[in-house]
Image (cartoon, rainbow, N blue to C red):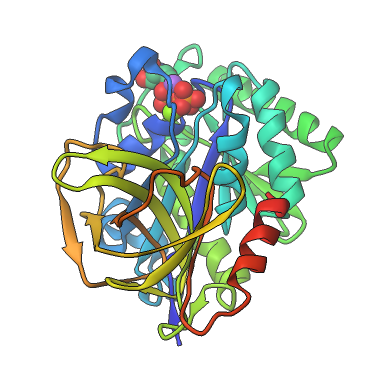
Length: 345
Ligand code: GTP
Ligand code: NA
Ligand code: MG
């Protein structure tokens, strides 16, 4: 048995800092290049373990899971009101989630919407209170842990931060969740951790990554076991025309293994199941955002979950985004399975 990377979805209201948080972790600047500053598609990035270790150092030295999982597989979702179905899709895929809230703005309509998605799928999550660098009087310490930076703040700034954190605690309480600032949590099974961060300066991101690994270790180890012989299961994010490849589908594979020449079943826009044969599998390099089309993809004969990949195959014209993806090998009930999964979304 092998353990795959946990899929971590980042959810929250528009402009609360989801893409910027992932930019910091990746060392990229995707958020700056988005049209209107708005994310319009689901994104996917693999963050390998050595990057996590580089950021976290000693913070994760006692977490054994870091030696078992290849890394964390992050899904970026749009926060704009128009993209409910994409948020749901991002939420449905998640093993773990980061619910991001602008600490100065508090909960907004799509924060509540995201929270309801997490409730519906019973996804374990942490809350990230972002933009602490905007608190009045905050002294920025680039890349520092929250703990280290917080200790160096003036008393009034510390109080202001805690007042705002307790507003979030109050809101979560009304929604049926017990929560606390992460360093005051006594029972991680019953309390949600709130981690104050700045996605811009990186303060607190060490604790976010360490907490995600800790939760994965505590609650997910069994769920993350993959059978490398099992046929792949995945979800289609987008259908895209690519020069030299024709129509392709961007997909996330969350279980099993997918190979070139596999017969796969997909859903059409008129809710019919279509089958096709994989011509090629392309995968972005680790740390590259899958929807960043200027980046190079590499060809693979097979991929093991979790992976974000582009698939080239004939007959993709009618595939609908959000479609389940199933491999056909000896799987007689695949059509039923796909129809059922569509109903569940
Ligand atoms: P959508 O995907 O459109 O929902 O937005 P988002 O949640 O991905 O937010 P995004 O990363 O696009 O950030 C929105 C704006 O807030 C950008 O101008 C960011 O530079 C800014 N921002 C994000 N995080 C921080 C932060 O920690 N501090 C400050 N000062 N600005 C931030
Ligand atoms: Na934005
Ligand atoms: Mg975004």
